[in-house]
Length: 300
Image (cartoon, rainbow, N blue to C red; front, side, top):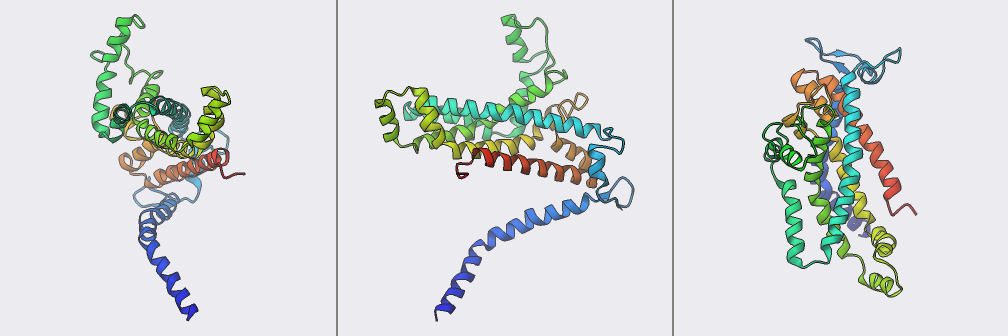
């Protein structure tokens, strides 16, 4: 009798995970396997030709050590720069804003959370239109402000200048990525035991010491989540690039995701696009593992 009950409970448990398993297999596992399969074929000719791992090699190095696919190398470097700049700034600004508004009145907290979260829930197209106007070389408000303050004495083409275009995109990415981390940090600060904070203040600890020794370690799981998610979003940045610069000038703002789109949709080379996507997934996986290794609180 006990064995029958145990088996029935085991099978019922599988029923609970069945919807998620079906979704994962249909929309994640099968497309992933199909992408790996496509990456082994070349679509440059009319009929797909099996080339094995050749496309992976062509994306990085040739037999003599010279780069073959220069746009991929440029896009990869740009993606790394975007991630390396955006992620730390998002984390630091988010925790600063959260700590600043946490002890304020509830209405003040709600106001600032709403202000920072609006760009996150707004349409990418609408946000892009606003920033395109801000960056406009002739009528943009950014040039107007800088000219009025005497910082610059000419109109700068922020999105067309190779030295400023990528950082103009990064600025937009940062402003649209702050909403969720701020909300998460405010919630995490609410879970820090007040007894510990009060005891440390009684012992004479400064606010910085309290934050560094008590608050920061206790909200580390939230920080890990924010770092991982922001990193993945930074690696997958696409819409801003497509709508504002189309990867230009001279691939100065191109990212791996935009190059995947260009190869698959514009050029019809689904094999090369799949190879790029697989390499991107591998890089994201490696970086995520490293982040879990150094930021996870379960390592001890």
